[in-house]
Amino acid sequence: MLALGIIIVILSLIIFIVWQIIRAVKMQKRNDKPLYLSTNGKVNKGVLSGLFFQLLESLEIIKTSKNIDIIIGRYDFVKELCSGLAAHSSNQVYKNSFFAVVEQYKQMYYDKLIFQEQVSIAENPQDINQLNEFYADNLFRALTVNVANHYEAIAGMKQKKAIQGRYQKIIELCELVKEHIKALSIQEKNKYLEEIFSIRREASTKKETV
Image (spheres, helix red, strand yellow):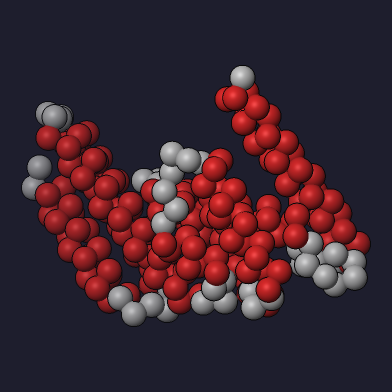
Protein backbone atom coordinates (compact mmCIF):
# COMPACT_ATOMS: atom_id res chain seq x y z
CA MET A 1 0.00 0.00 0.00
CA LEU A 2 2.87 2.37 0.83
CA ALA A 3 4.52 1.67 -2.53
CA LEU A 4 1.22 2.31 -4.33
CA GLY A 5 0.85 5.61 -2.51
CA ILE A 6 4.35 6.69 -3.55
CA ILE A 7 3.63 5.78 -7.18
CA ILE A 8 0.41 7.81 -7.14
CA VAL A 9 2.22 10.84 -5.69
CA ILE A 10 4.98 10.59 -8.33
CA LEU A 11 2.46 10.23 -11.18
CA SER A 12 0.50 13.21 -9.89
CA LEU A 13 3.67 15.29 -9.77
CA ILE A 14 4.63 14.31 -13.33
CA ILE A 15 1.13 15.13 -14.63
CA PHE A 16 1.24 18.52 -12.90
CA ILE A 17 4.66 19.35 -14.37
CA VAL A 18 3.61 18.31 -17.89
CA TRP A 19 0.42 20.36 -17.62
CA GLN A 20 2.41 23.40 -16.50
CA ILE A 21 4.82 23.04 -19.43
CA ILE A 22 1.99 22.65 -21.98
CA ARG A 23 0.29 25.70 -20.50
CA ALA A 24 3.50 27.69 -20.68
CA VAL A 25 4.15 26.69 -24.29
CA LYS A 26 0.72 28.04 -25.24
CA MET A 27 1.50 31.25 -23.37
CA GLN A 28 4.83 31.55 -25.11
CA LYS A 29 3.22 31.26 -28.54
CA ARG A 30 0.96 34.18 -27.63
CA ASN A 31 3.52 36.33 -25.82
CA ASP A 32 6.91 35.15 -27.14
CA LYS A 33 8.31 35.02 -23.57
CA PRO A 34 10.55 32.39 -21.97
CA LEU A 35 8.63 29.29 -20.92
CA TYR A 36 9.10 29.88 -17.22
CA LEU A 37 7.81 33.47 -17.19
CA SER A 38 4.13 34.22 -16.63
CA THR A 39 2.25 36.98 -18.43
CA ASN A 40 3.26 39.53 -15.75
CA GLY A 41 6.94 38.69 -16.17
CA LYS A 42 7.30 36.75 -12.91
CA VAL A 43 8.95 33.36 -12.74
CA ASN A 44 6.46 30.49 -13.07
CA LYS A 45 7.77 28.09 -10.43
CA GLY A 46 5.78 25.11 -11.72
CA VAL A 47 7.19 25.38 -15.22
CA LEU A 48 10.66 26.17 -13.90
CA SER A 49 10.58 22.97 -11.85
CA GLY A 50 9.64 21.00 -14.97
CA LEU A 51 12.54 22.50 -16.90
CA PHE A 52 14.93 21.65 -14.08
CA PHE A 53 13.76 18.03 -14.18
CA GLN A 54 14.39 17.90 -17.92
CA LEU A 55 17.80 19.50 -17.45
CA LEU A 56 18.90 17.09 -14.73
CA GLU A 57 17.63 14.08 -16.71
CA SER A 58 19.36 15.19 -19.91
CA LEU A 59 22.66 15.83 -18.13
CA GLU A 60 22.45 12.39 -16.53
CA ILE A 61 21.92 10.84 -19.98
CA ILE A 62 24.91 12.71 -21.40
CA LYS A 63 26.97 11.49 -18.45
CA THR A 64 26.02 7.81 -18.73
CA SER A 65 24.94 7.05 -22.30
CA LYS A 66 27.09 5.06 -24.71
CA ASN A 67 25.10 6.26 -27.72
CA ILE A 68 26.97 9.14 -29.35
CA ASP A 69 23.95 10.35 -31.35
CA ILE A 70 21.86 10.54 -28.18
CA ILE A 71 24.60 12.52 -26.40
CA ILE A 72 24.76 14.98 -29.31
CA GLY A 73 20.98 15.42 -29.32
CA ARG A 74 20.80 15.91 -25.57
CA TYR A 75 23.60 18.45 -25.65
CA ASP A 76 21.68 20.55 -28.18
CA PHE A 77 18.61 20.37 -25.95
CA VAL A 78 20.56 21.24 -22.79
CA LYS A 79 22.33 24.12 -24.51
CA GLU A 80 18.96 25.58 -25.52
CA LEU A 81 17.59 25.13 -22.00
CA CYS A 82 20.63 26.77 -20.41
CA SER A 83 20.42 29.68 -22.83
CA GLY A 84 16.85 30.36 -21.74
CA LEU A 85 17.55 29.91 -18.03
CA ALA A 86 20.76 31.94 -17.87
CA ALA A 87 19.08 35.35 -17.67
CA HIS A 88 17.30 34.43 -14.43
CA SER A 89 19.86 32.18 -12.70
CA SER A 90 20.64 34.87 -10.12
CA ASN A 91 16.95 35.17 -9.18
CA GLN A 92 16.25 33.83 -5.68
CA VAL A 93 13.10 32.06 -6.94
CA TYR A 94 15.33 30.26 -9.44
CA LYS A 95 17.73 29.10 -6.73
CA ASN A 96 14.97 28.02 -4.34
CA SER A 97 13.10 26.15 -7.09
CA PHE A 98 16.27 24.39 -8.18
CA PHE A 99 17.18 23.05 -4.74
CA ALA A 100 13.59 21.91 -4.19
CA VAL A 101 13.71 20.04 -7.52
CA VAL A 102 17.00 18.36 -6.58
CA GLU A 103 15.29 16.88 -3.51
CA GLN A 104 12.28 15.75 -5.58
CA TYR A 105 14.61 14.27 -8.19
CA LYS A 106 16.43 12.26 -5.52
CA GLN A 107 13.11 10.85 -4.29
CA MET A 108 11.83 9.98 -7.77
CA TYR A 109 15.12 8.49 -8.95
CA TYR A 110 16.37 7.04 -5.70
CA ASP A 111 18.44 4.47 -7.62
CA LYS A 112 20.44 7.17 -9.44
CA LEU A 113 23.18 9.39 -8.15
CA ILE A 114 23.12 13.11 -8.86
CA PHE A 115 26.50 14.01 -10.29
CA GLN A 116 28.24 17.19 -9.24
CA GLU A 117 28.32 18.28 -12.90
CA GLN A 118 24.52 18.13 -13.05
CA VAL A 119 24.17 20.44 -10.08
CA SER A 120 26.92 22.83 -11.17
CA ILE A 121 25.64 23.23 -14.75
CA ALA A 122 22.03 23.69 -13.62
CA GLU A 123 23.10 26.23 -10.99
CA ASN A 124 25.21 28.15 -13.51
CA PRO A 125 23.47 27.84 -16.90
CA GLN A 126 25.29 30.94 -18.13
CA ASP A 127 28.65 29.10 -17.94
CA ILE A 128 28.72 27.65 -21.47
CA ASN A 129 32.38 26.64 -21.07
CA GLN A 130 31.49 24.30 -18.23
CA LEU A 131 28.75 22.69 -20.31
CA ASN A 132 31.05 22.32 -23.32
CA GLU A 133 33.81 20.69 -21.25
CA PHE A 134 31.24 18.27 -19.82
CA TYR A 135 29.93 17.52 -23.31
CA ALA A 136 33.38 16.94 -24.84
CA ASP A 137 34.45 14.69 -21.97
CA ASN A 138 31.40 12.47 -22.37
CA LEU A 139 31.57 12.41 -26.16
CA PHE A 140 35.10 11.08 -25.86
CA ARG A 141 34.08 8.65 -23.11
CA ALA A 142 31.31 7.24 -25.30
CA LEU A 143 33.72 6.98 -28.22
CA THR A 144 36.20 4.91 -26.21
CA VAL A 145 33.40 2.61 -24.99
CA ASN A 146 32.18 2.05 -28.55
CA VAL A 147 35.70 1.48 -29.83
CA ALA A 148 36.34 -1.11 -27.10
CA ASN A 149 33.07 -2.87 -28.00
CA HIS A 150 34.04 -2.98 -31.69
CA TYR A 151 37.47 -4.42 -30.90
CA GLU A 152 35.86 -7.04 -28.68
CA ALA A 153 33.54 -8.00 -31.55
CA ILE A 154 36.46 -8.09 -34.00
CA ALA A 155 38.29 -10.57 -31.77
CA GLY A 156 35.54 -13.12 -32.43
CA MET A 157 35.32 -12.57 -36.21
CA LYS A 158 36.96 -14.54 -39.00
CA GLN A 159 35.64 -12.98 -42.21
CA LYS A 160 37.85 -10.23 -43.63
CA LYS A 161 34.93 -8.14 -44.89
CA ALA A 162 33.17 -8.17 -41.51
CA ILE A 163 36.38 -7.22 -39.69
CA GLN A 164 37.06 -4.37 -42.10
CA GLY A 165 33.48 -3.19 -41.63
CA ARG A 166 34.02 -2.92 -37.89
CA TYR A 167 37.22 -0.93 -38.35
CA GLN A 168 35.35 1.36 -40.73
CA LYS A 169 32.70 1.97 -38.07
CA ILE A 170 35.44 2.99 -35.63
CA ILE A 171 36.85 5.40 -38.21
CA GLU A 172 33.40 6.93 -38.81
CA LEU A 173 32.74 7.35 -35.09
CA CYS A 174 36.11 9.08 -34.70
CA GLU A 175 35.22 11.48 -37.52
CA LEU A 176 31.82 12.23 -35.97
CA VAL A 177 33.21 12.95 -32.51
CA LYS A 178 36.14 14.91 -33.92
CA GLU A 179 33.86 17.29 -35.82
CA HIS A 180 31.72 17.99 -32.77
CA ILE A 181 34.68 18.57 -30.46
CA LYS A 182 36.41 20.78 -33.05
CA ALA A 183 33.36 23.06 -32.99
CA LEU A 184 33.77 23.71 -29.24
CA SER A 185 35.84 26.39 -27.53
CA ILE A 186 37.37 24.32 -24.75
CA GLN A 187 40.71 24.14 -22.99
CA GLU A 188 41.39 20.47 -23.67
CA LYS A 189 40.37 20.48 -27.35
CA ASN A 190 43.81 19.60 -28.74
CA LYS A 191 44.24 16.75 -26.26
CA TYR A 192 40.94 15.19 -27.33
CA LEU A 193 41.69 15.66 -31.02
CA GLU A 194 45.14 14.07 -30.69
CA GLU A 195 43.70 11.03 -28.91
CA ILE A 196 40.91 10.70 -31.49
CA PHE A 197 43.49 10.93 -34.29
CA SER A 198 45.50 8.15 -32.63
CA ILE A 199 42.43 5.88 -32.32
CA ARG A 200 41.44 6.56 -35.93
CA ARG A 201 44.95 5.95 -37.27
CA GLU A 202 45.22 2.61 -35.46
CA ALA A 203 41.83 1.47 -36.80
CA SER A 204 42.71 2.61 -40.33
CA THR A 205 46.06 0.77 -40.26
CA LYS A 206 44.48 -2.42 -38.98
CA LYS A 207 41.71 -2.21 -41.59
CA GLU A 208 44.30 -2.07 -44.37
CA THR A 209 46.33 -4.99 -42.99
CA VAL A 210 43.54 -7.47 -42.26
